[in-house]
Length: 152
Image (cartoon, rainbow, N blue to C red):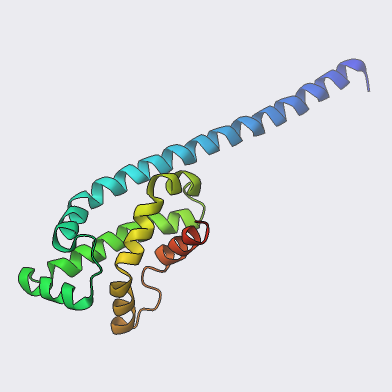
């Protein structure tokens, strides 16, 4: 192998590793931007419903009787709002649990709210799972909330 061949080989190796490093940096940047966009979308999607549910129930512990009473007043709108809120968090949790979004960024931004939402509506989740025989309803949300609660 001539000195020129050795230099060409070295340049090829350096180019290869530089390409890998750049691709890795772009990938990490893309995940960060995607996570931030997902969190902003979540915030926008749930803003009004979260406000309505907070207005109805506040931060007190609520039960299915409370939800049933509200449903009678608003044609089952309350159950729909709770399901919508939980489904939005379920989508976020599934993406995080499968590595599609940055858990670190999401946790910084939404940890308290996500865990609170899960805990606050756990009675509803358990009731839904049992009455509809859907034991995996909002399972990704549960997995993420439990993981974040363990790390507290």
